[in-house]
Length: 278
Image (cartoon, rainbow, N blue to C red; front, top):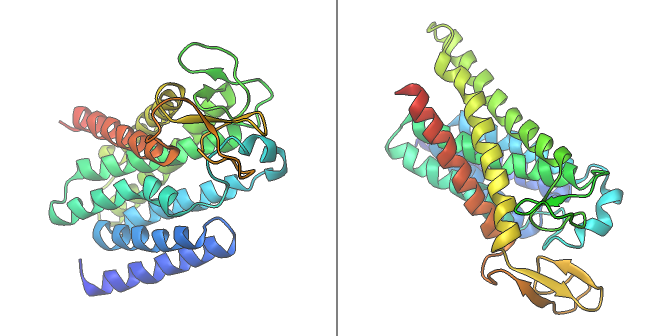
């Protein structure tokens, strides 16, 4: 929690936030949120936490623009576009910042495991969405198996599930590689605990991503635009027309769904770690 780490975290976060805004991955409010969240995580969690946050940001931002032309019509169902605003940044990184704050005062490996689960979840969910909507096979509702329109909340595809596994695996592999490097350079040798972070990430990330879909299929607020005859996650469709409430709780928007999903992912990862390490 030194001043040097605060300055370094702030500088790196400004660089990342500015890059995200320049690449149109972040709005102005999103860039501000990225600086806030990034600074807290770098400063209070440490360099390992910060690197994992950067891995999530870079990979998810790239995928958000991957084959973007093919996603345009489907993206109208989403409450927001490919540019993340303050709400999305806090939904994806806010819990990580909270964990970093706790970790700074009470360092515990289980908190790091929870953070890895959180990052794995938000990365897995982003990958599932950005890759899954390109599936040639229509998605199915996670609760009933009913065929859904591409991009509909609560729908899952085989491609999307495998993409979520890959997204979680990236975070877990990065965590394991970094921790093993520290262990080897420190003369401790090969660490089984470090190796387990890959499993923790996949378990937490996949569970959190599926929980996100479950909320989308059951209680997330979903609306219908009469003008465009399209389902949407936003009470105001992108065409500017007010949408009619279709199902779910109006207060439970996509940002809160992402936050609760990351919470589940973090809890699952920490629980698996507790079982493995006890």
